[in-house]
Image (cartoon, rainbow, N blue to C red; front, top):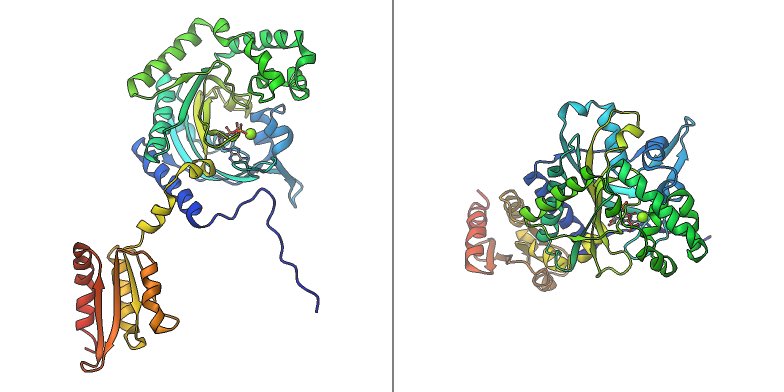
Length: 420
Ligand code: ATP
Ligand code: MG
């Protein structure tokens, strides 16, 4: 008979299991709790959109649109794309679903994204993000609010140590354009010294050269013109209000004058939370203000700001994931005699309804079940045996007194009521 081959998983996708999955869930749960503190409304977004939602808003020259999108024609002949980010889809919904009426609108979501990238540690083709956006808010307080929320998230995850907030301004449209022209001039002078990638960026997307990790580019980036020399008075005031707001809110930040964001639509504030603990994939959270985006989708001028964070990268920083998993088990039930199975099942159901996390060992050789239960690492071991003289199941509990008391208050009445 021909051997049936098992299909392999797709490169750059992950099956997340064990402590990594616990850390992943913990990141999402913490985000959910914090977005409510900051009054962000939950939204659910489609995983695919018309290709133009992304190509128009992100810009054809970005890495994402030019080489990372999963685009395909569906059976109706329409070009669709698996979302490579949340912002464009949320901006589209803002226009098509009438969300303008809620402006300023604070929304949060999370889920999978897809980019055709070179898979490596911390970089996948299907990955997951947390996302928070404020649409229809032009004031610096919106930027401060988002950054304070990101800062609190990292602190509550216990991973803020060694993660720094790098902050920059890209100015308003005139400042950014003047800076862009000066950069092009600067890099053109030493064109041949640039990496091949950056020579190409020079024509298409010169700001991206500042982002380059190639050592040949780094020296030239160091001497490149700074945005500060091109900021309009208004752009300067805006940035000052953001930094003063952060100081007032107790959010630590560092100026990084060469920080740019990969996408074309950013204005004013741009930021990244960066760690050196994840090697080359050190950016855990990034975002900024994108006042020009909604217009590229045919909407009115809508100022907006947001961020996204890689859940896998955050989860990798959550060190005590193992503890998260074990802490979850309050009580393990062990059926040492099969005649006690019914009352054990009853107890299990009642304990879970009362809010205790509980599991049961009721299979395999009865003599080995207790040892299995011990290994579960629960707070309380609740074992059931059968008393021949009384002709009924009996229970025994082992664990800290306060927990044993709470649990037995639920179990004892069930044991006493047997056969009634
Ligand atoms: P990078 O410079 O690492 O490619 P990016 O600028 O493309 O990041 P964004 O589009 O701003 O990233 O996405 C926000 C966050 O999402 C990143 O900071 C990172 O934590 C995460 N992220 C982005 N791409 C991936 C990926 N391919 N795999 C895992 N996480 C990712
Ligand atoms: Mg990228």
